[in-house]
Amino acid sequence: MILCDFHTHSNNSFDAENTVDEMCRAAVRQGLSAIAVTDHCEAPYIVYGDDCEFGSFDKQIPASLRDAQAAREKYRGELDVFCGMELGEPMHDPKQTERALQYGDFDFILASVHNLRGLDDFYYMDFSAVDLNEILCAYFDELLETASFPYFDSLSHLTYPLRYVYERTGSVPDLTPYLPRIEAIFQKLIQNKKALEINVSGLFKPMNTTLPPQELVSLFRRMGGQYVTIGTDAHRADMVGKGVKEGIAVAKKAGFTHYTLYQAHTPKLIPLD
Image 1 (tube, rainbow, N blue to C red):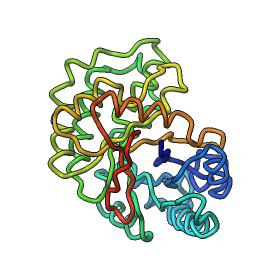
Image 2 (image 1 turned 180 degrees about the vertical axis):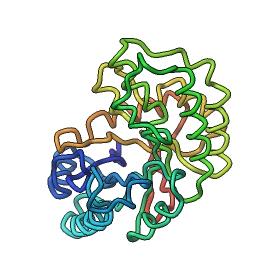
Image 3 (image 1 turned 180 degrees about the horizontal axis):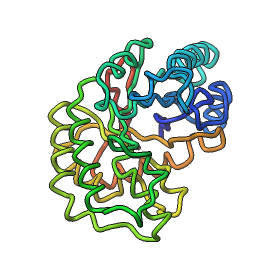
């Protein structure tokens, strides 16, 4: 079984701990064949530069690229290292998104939505003080908008808000009312030949499921989805590669025969067995 982790964060992300080299060493210890370094770039915050609460993305992303390129040479023949970025909220500020895309040569771009326009990250949201149905409708609508964006490879952690809904309320809402919106997102991904990420971070959180869960990955496949990427969303070296085998099992159960890595934005199919 070929193991690849295509969603990791180094200390070039504001909320992560370890260097790219430390993440790569952990990947080697875990027996991975490949890793993508996908440090955070929250597009609408780029404009704030050094005054940004997350730090300057103008500095962090070029540093991430340099570190990943250096690791690529250092670990050549032992581990394939790919240059990536997790591009948050690309539809909020097109000018800043274009700026992010010019930081360097990426192999792989994850598109994410961590917050709705004018609101804080779901991580900070008090779900007892909002209309959750309204929030989720707006979230899936924005994911559909994001799925139409041409300059990304894989849509990250589709059910991201539910991670925090479960932690704070102890339950996850029934997604049946949102299936038409989710199906529209999947149809757009399929039409545009984009991947859906199986993010395994939820397996190590109270919700104990991938993002999205098995049933939605299976729906994506039934609708004609061709590409899935698998990522741990590791923010520490000790989480690199953790859960990748479980992510592969989810893909296999959904009916996929391969998962995908990206080199220069070109999909490479990795057999599941």
